[in-house]
Length: 359
Ligand SMILES: Cc1cc2nc3c(=O)[nH]c(=O)nc-3n(C[C@H](O)[C@H](O)[C@H](O)COP(=O)(O)O)c2cc1C
Image 1 (cartoon, rainbow, N blue to C red):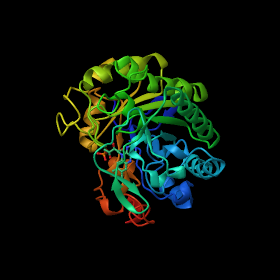
Image 2 (image 1 turned 120 degrees about the vertical axis):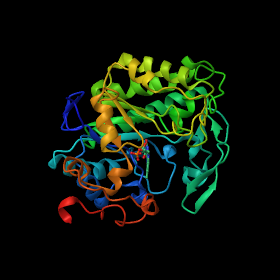
Image 3 (image 1 turned 60 degrees about the vertical axis):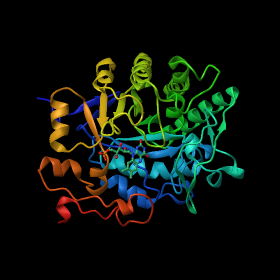
């Protein structure tokens, strides 16, 4: 019977297990350059069937938080190459999560203190995270139609950088209220041009990015992450089922490595719009399906065994258990994660969680 320890084929890759590491921003890349400390963190977790990196900005404009890594200049390529080489020596697999935050940025983080960009000039409610701490989100500048293709070009450049940095693939971050998701959902997209209005138009930017990134990597080494029910970053859609079934149907035509749907938000029904059963997306999707959000070993094993998903991405359990796969294999107790050290800081709460054989 298929379970978490059954190997899984993703594009050209044979993953040794279905216990994947979810993308997690940890804000430990000062000046946006991947470093030795990050190398230690990722190599410690290389037993995951696949590690998806933290969100990694595709351009200076794409940044949204302090000390997040980039993948758009030669220093980024060199820093990540050092990490992917070390991970490959441990037989690990690693995809880079390509990220543009759109309206979730702040002028303090932007070149020339520019306004963040978005599909529409609608400020999210809440605070941006700047180097001086939280500051209210500003009203973003709505992108002009012709600028949208420039951002697609930035995705291509970042995808090329990720290829040279030795990653095994890339995950397009179309979730959690960042730029692509801002286009997808009508709460943040009220454009009048071919990128707004109908669900076909709201999906156009995602599809253009996928097409462009697939052009660099080949479809089997590209994944897409969606978060249909996620209210985080003040997200809302009038009909998430219609929006996301349409988007997933469109994505089917690429034969991508995987679709990654986080279930975040399903515990707060209707916060991001009318709730629907995410299994609908699983049923539509014709490739490898990954899900995420609140799973433990038992619920993950059940979901993989009964075919609800092919693999589970674990977030917080991987923060505090670098050897999560061994721990699951041995039914060992897990370390609790400490939220105080999630975002920023040093090795504390980052690379100092004990593994089983450290005890
Ligand atoms: C510290 C932290 C940082 C995160 N950063 C990202 C990110 O960069 N990209 C992303 O898609 N999701 C991000 N997430 C969401 C996780 O990928 C995942 O969806 C969430 O933790 C739920 O999974 P879990 O219940 O297994 O922790 C983050 C979550 C945490 C806790």
